[in-house]
Structure formats: structure tokens, C-alpha cells
Length: 626
Image (cartoon, rainbow, N blue to C red):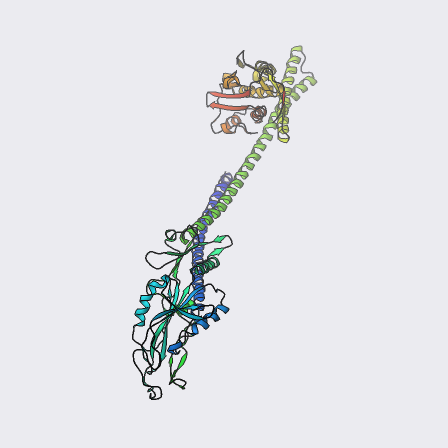
């Protein structure tokens, strides 16, 4: 008993253990996916920040190439401080890869009184003619109108000490690069004052600080269309993949109106990128950030010798300008802003969507594993149950075969030994041997039919078969069986019942199995009824077989049509049978295009209903393979 109980609890323990393992794997998978999502988000953010930095660096490099090309010499003479810009432009045009980036070059010359070192000149705006390198006075164009007041205000500031100033300013609203042009010298020339003649001027003392005098401004107007192409190329380079843009990109003005300068998608709006996954100012705000975005360490200022006179040798030294050209945003408005947001939404939503997808896949695999385990367990249980049924079948068939064989052998022995002498005894023994032989033949027939049905599909010759005739032949065949002794079989068949479309032999075998089942399980009532009528408007015929036996247990009812299955009540009552009759009956019914159902109430009997299609009067015989 203990061993049997242990074997019974073993599958339950196995199921519990497997469920615990799957639950543990699910928890570990969930935590692992969370860690993976965090790492993935960190990686994406780092990659995005790197792309933003490279975008800014590349954009800044292109502007730096322009600003460096037009960087003026602060020691230039006042009369010709703008003349070098023609040479610088021509040199830049020969070496640049983006010759269309510069639209115009202007020099605004601030006014100054006459001095021994410089002639008097009035404020004017000069525009470079790229063809011959000459400057022509022009009126202020409309594109630079908002810049004039700021330049005049800065030009009126008094001279100051030199320093690392003089950075270029990016005026995004134009757009243009602007830088003051100044002269650094000793005390020998100051705007607004007349120094002594050069020959009579004493050498300035070493302690006299040099001064920076603003002579004017260099204005490099950039081509807006070329700027758009540059931004588009950079966006494609750093924010797109083989299938297009991974991120939506906007470059907007820093002013409150947020005017869009560039968009990666013509339908893109600023609201679609709010909030962005990453944003940065395109122009650096401070010199330190300037050096950081440029990707180089801070550079020392070069030394420019202070001149003692025209053509004289230099004495002393002071820092004049950096070897590069800083570009800072305009004071008039904040710099352009680069906004980036993933096309699938925010990075949080994209990472969360990937995490959900990974969880679905992972849990799908775990579910598949659980289903596989369940199927294995179910298959194992079914295999064990099938083995048990097969053993019970072998035992049942052996018992069923042994009984008629033993009766036949015993009767034959009595006849052979001469114990039977009278004619009545011989007749009785002959009937006994005949009945037992029929029972034995019936059992063998059922087993052969089941084996044939399992090996190959059954073939039926369908045609019109009168139900009354089929039922009559079945009752006549089983009338001589021992099970039929003392039984009352009632028939209620509609005289106008149409024939059914069926195979005559198969239909008789199906009905025989159903009636014999009612005789075996009819109990002490020893009563059965065969009732036939039409259904579904006359298109189908229903044949019912009822008994008043003990009925079928609800737990056994779903399994009674399974091969070799026998209910617990039948086994305990030791009712003979192999558990194949009802299975064969259902196979025959379904093979002929019908169906077989069962209904039962414990203690009140059972009812089996065979439903077949009604045959048309002129229907031709058919051959149907199940």
C-alpha cells in the first residue's frame, strides 16, 4: 500500500517541482530583462550623446574653417586692414570642400579722424567682389539690417588692453560670422588723438601697456541653402541607419518663437520632439566649451612683437590672438538648439517596448517549455493508462475467451465420454455449444474489426437501408443469445420513416452492439426499447436504444466510447466484455456520415442515439471511406 501511494504521489511531486522551476526561471527572466533594459538604455543614451557631440563637432569644424580663413592680423596698419580679406577669401575658395558655404564677405569700416598714422575716413560698408578681389562700398543689405546698430555701439567703446578676445560671433538669425577688426599698438596711435611725429616720438617706456583699437568688423554672410544641406548631411551621417532616420532631428532657433531651421522630416513639428531625448546648443557658449567641442586641449596664445615704429625692430611682447578662431553665440539671441528624439517615441518608451517584446518572447519560450512538460506528463499518464487498459483488455479477453472455451470443452467431454444419452440432452448440449461458439465468434469479430480499423480506414458501400428491416434482422440474430433470455425489447419505428443512407452490414453491426450493450447493462428490469424517427425536418433519422439499468457514472460518461474502456461499475459487477463495442459503434456511425451520442442518469438507465442522414428515394449507391 505504501509503495502504491508513493507511486500515486510521484507525478504530483514531479508537477510541483517543474512548476517551481518554471516560476523561478520566470522570476530570473524578469529580473534579467530589467537589467538588460537598463544597460540598453545606458548604451542608447551614450550612443545618442556621442552622435550629438559629433554632430556639433562637425558643424563647428565647418564654421571654424571659415572663421580661421578670414582671421585678421591685429598688427595690420589702419589704412589696409581690410585688404588682406580678398587674399584670404581666394585662398579659402581654392582649398575648401564647401565653396558655396560663404555667400558674401563684408567689411564694415568704422569712421576715424585724421592722424599722422592714418587718414581720415568715414564709416562705410564694403563688399568683396570675388572675381577680382576688390571691395566696393555698398548700402546695408536687408539681411544685415538688424546687425548695424550692434556693431556701431561696439565700435564706440573706448580702446582697451589687448587680450584673448576678438572671437567670432555666430549670428544665427542672418546667418553670418562676425568678428571685430582691431589694431594693437603702443601709445603712438589712438583713435581720436594726434600722436607726435614718428621721428620726434620718444620710445615708449616698457611699462606702457598696449591698447586694442577697433577699426571695424568682418562679416562673413553664410549661404542659408548650403547651411541646410550641411545640417542634412550631418543628420543623415549621425542619426540615420540603413533604413532611414532612427531619430527625428530638429534644429530650432534659440528665441522664444523657436523657429525651425532644419527638420529631418518635412512633416515634423516641434511639439513632436517635446521632450527630446537629447538636446544641445550648436554653438559653444564659453571659450572653455569652445575648446571642448573642438576636441582639443586649451591652446596657448601666440606672442606678437610690439612694434617700436614703422619698419623698426620690436621691443617687448604681449598676447595677441589664439592660433584658432573661437566662435561664440550672438548676444542678441540664444544659439541654435539641436533636438533629437527616437522615431518610436521617447527612449524610455522604446526601451520599454523592447523589454516587453523580450519578455513576451522569453515567457513564450517558458510557456512552450511548460506546455511541452505538460504534454510529456499527459503523454506519460496516457501511456500508463493505455498500458493498464491493455492489460485489463488482455485479462478481460482472456477471461471472456476462457469461459466459452471451457463451456464448449466441458460439453464436448461429456458427449465424448457418453454421459449424454438421451435425445433431449444431446439437443441441449448442442444448443449450449452453438451459443458459446457464437459468443466466441462475436468477440473475435469485434477484435478483428478494431484491429482492421486501426490499421486502415474502413470502406462503406452507402445506399438506402430501411431502418425497420435492419432492426428486425438484428433482433432475430441476438434472440438466441443467453443475454436475450427473458428480455423484453420494444420497437417504436415510424411506418413512414425514410430509409437511411448507410452500409447495411455496418448498420446492423452498429445496432447489434448498441442492443447487446443494453441487454448486458439493463439490470433486473430486463427491458430495452428501440425507437426511430426523423429529425431536422426529415433530412436525418434518429435511432435510439434505451435501457432501465443502473446507468453510467458521470465520471465514466466522457470515456465510454474510448477503446478498452470499462466503467468501474461494470468491472465490479464482473459483466463480461472487452470495452470495444461502443468504440466500434461510434467509428461505424461517424464513418457513414452520422454520429452517436450517449446520455444517462444514474439509477434510471441509459440512452444511446444514432443519427444518420436520410436517403433520397432516387439516391444512387455511394462508396464512402472513413
